[in-house]
Every structure is written in C-alpha cells, then in structure tokens.
Length: 157
Image 1 (cartoon, rainbow, N blue to C red):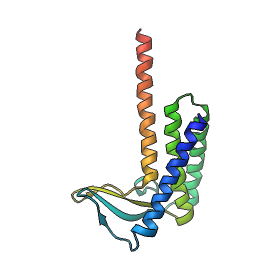
Image 2: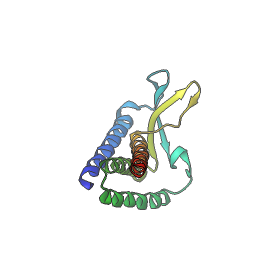
Image 3: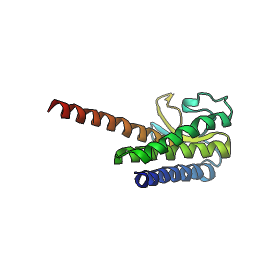
Image 4: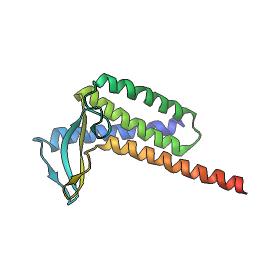
C-alpha cells in the first residue's frame, strides 16, 4: 500500500508548502487580517509549539525528536497495511507532519494562516498541513468504526 499512500504524502506536503509560500510571499506582504467571510479570515501566525501552541517554549530539536519517530512508525504502518483507506489516511498524516516539520527547520515555527471564528471567539489559526493531519486521523477513526461493525456483523451471523 506504500504506492498508494506515498502520493497522498507528497500531495498533502506540496499543497501545504505551496499555500504557505503563497501566503508568506504574496498575500501577507505586509502582514494583516484579511476578512474573507463573516466567519473566516486569512491571518499570519507562527506557532512555535505543537497543537494549539502547546510546548511553545520547547526547542525545535526536541519537537523534531518527538515527531520523527512517530512519522517513521506511520510509514512502517503504511507498508504493512492491507487497507487502501488506511494507506491514504496515513499518507495525509505523514505529508502534513513533513510540511510542518519543514516549517520548523526553515522558520523555527509553523506558518498558520486559516482563521475561523464565531463572533469574537477565534479557533487557533492553522494551515493545510493541519487539515491533512486531521483529515487523515478522521479517516482512520471512520475506518476503525466500519471495521468494528463488520467484525460484529460477521460474529453475529
């Protein structure tokens, strides 16, 4: 399934890097808030931590030391799975992880620019790498529920 998952890794990585390049070099020059709808803005933010800025004071090398073994494990899982959906999901997660990892190496922080809000409450800004990671995890959860239902149906029959 590596042949199926790796293109999704590459696609999510390239989409993430292209959008970050576009935001940094064209849209946010100078940095500002760009209202797109009543609930969505483009902004420019840099996250030195992990999800929601957690561990923002941790050095980049420590975060990378945590992320790289996880990515290696996901790639091993991708090589061993028989499920197309798992391979695609893992590809999305790995591509997103590589996108954010490259940001840490290049900028010392992850570039975020998607800002959804309801009134004055703003969800933490994020990027397409984050979208790929969340989508991949959601696919893995959906597949686990479907597999559980199939197993239950088979044992009930």
